[in-house]
Length: 335
Image (cartoon, rainbow, N blue to C red):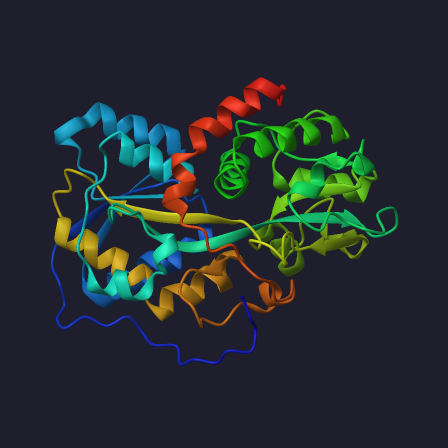
């Protein structure tokens, strides 16, 4: 469960000696606030980070094209589906790190130690307080005909939704997942469009009674001025799904060491740094995410969302069901 009262000392990432050399980082994380993560690592280790940034699919395709000559040391990206895709394409390698094994919960690690999760976003239901008196209690409830014409959610090509449906397959099986997807399509207020912030804006505009969004989009609107959302955010209620069952689904941001990493040792050091208290606190303070490491304090605006039970399903098992999730989306006509 994510709590706001845990107090721990913020320990700076430490190394036994200043390292030398460089690190080639391929990253699809597009947040300016991550600059602090990189500069702190460079200051602590002396390792210079060379960054190649782009969309996840583009970076994966680039690594495939580069093959054994790829300069990539680390792939850092968002969502289990992309990490699984990189692994299946042979772009990552297994690593043995006692630090990562100890710090990162087992369910947030690849079964073969090829990727590790470092921050999380809860996939939640948000609702119009004025028009929705009883929001869905579970993920499956979103398909209840009582919510017909009220649901706003992203397209089936969105990785967050793919992983959510894959988790439903993992917990409840293919038949239940197919019925759920079909029911959600029947309950949509509009055809899928835009990003998670657009779903939340739909509540403010009155187009949506219920919106599915990752937590950090809402938390960001609490911290800063998000056009079309922050000024009227009090209209929106938060529902943490499946609290009496599996818990709230968590989307992952994580990374792994590239299969042909020329600076492998430095790459492992960087992943271990991302698991440090210093970096974990910054994921929350800088980008409104939940840390992967237990006991790390949350940013004030993230804590304001409230305490909840998180789904602790093994994300390697969820990743294995992503192809079936896309097949189901196609079958039910989820655009």
